[in-house]
Length: 247
Length: 247
DNA sequence: CGAGGGTTTGAAGTGCATCAAATAGTGTGG
DNA sequence: CCACACTATTTGATGCACTTCAAACCCTCG
Image (cartoon, rainbow over all chains, first blue to last red; front, top):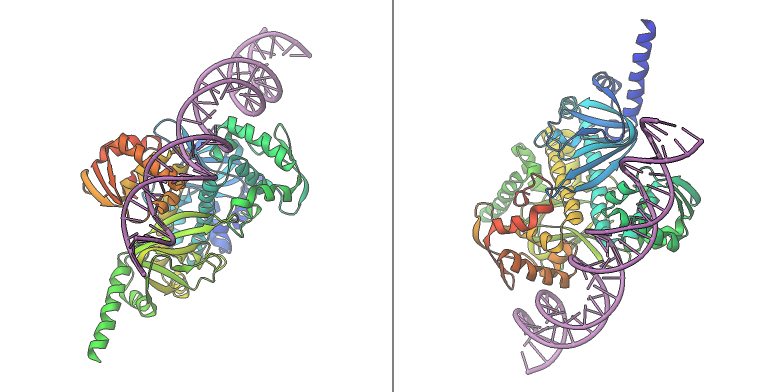
């Protein structure tokens, strides 16, 4: 019994520290974090699992602990518009607190993941009751909005090659500037969709980007000799003072 | 002296009722509205006037009373990414309350307008102090975010013709469904930029849209025989349950 | 009237999508 | 461990959408 309690407590402690590291729960008092952790449900999922569909009643919001989740909308003609793919530390589905209490997009697991879900009603409760919570929420929303308007800018002004370069920059560890090697976090097909292009276009654009910036790609493994060469090639069309690897 | 006071009072009353009609100030107590109105400054501007530039210290936020304001970013290669053009009743620049206290975009008048500016610090004060204010702010931000993610979707999946059709739908008065006539609110050049296309493309796409949907254009005057014909042509690629004329 | 910006039109080029097919990679059952 | 099925990715050929560059047209306003 003691062991059981201990396990529960460990899981709870884990959730609490995860929550604390997100912008939304930053600086929140311990008792609030505990309250959320107590109402949490953890979820392991495999590629292909659907978390929720656009229009579903929004009873939970999610925190990614591990893996990748695709956020998208289906269009009337049967295609799909992917507008974000999120990973560890990101909270999503929480924006349905406002409006019609229904999700405004769908979410699907694209790389095996652990998600923690919390009742939307609990968030709603604290948004009304706790000043800090409300402030954090606004901060997070402002941040996301800024990112999104950059996204619009990118779709408007960048070529396929440049959008890929920009994504690579955002995948790079921020410290290093040379001889970086990393793995593409999910299918090339999916990256293409995320960047608003077809798989074939992605493949060809990536090949050209290789010539233009000296990067190497083998399977999902990417090596980047010089960050500078990518930014030179990629960021010329972007607005001033924007750092891709800063998002 | 009495007349003078009366004029001041009228102006203040006007500001208060304008504020009350915005989502951000909806349901706010009278004394708060008065406080904002007291600190307000009104501004008449002509086409071409710049309200602020990206990076400027964000000391004011704005409410449009009349006219049109372009929100944009300049890119390193000297072009411009327009991500919104707003008009009466819209508040902008208020998102700089968060983050680095600097505007994240630039704003310029594109059709003669009246704007009312309020100190950002006052908003900040009430966001921390007043529950309703914080709630309204979040509501407004959620709304805007939803709109923006639709925008991304549109850029991804719609053709030039369809994007124009979509814009027209949003300009139509919501009640009517047939024989609508309206004026384009600002330069065609600017509409093109707003929709992420070149002026030449806009001109040609508009001509084709005329053939496809039966609309007529003379100068800035547009007549639309049937809304239905536009939605049939325009909205097929959009995600389900989205009403263009509902934004 | 004439200058200048906004708008349209034409010709040619570029980028991305589409359709089709080949190739590589992965997981399955034998 | 291999053959097979299936998916992901690449490659080729072709077409369409949008851009670019250039020039004409139109409208407004001094």
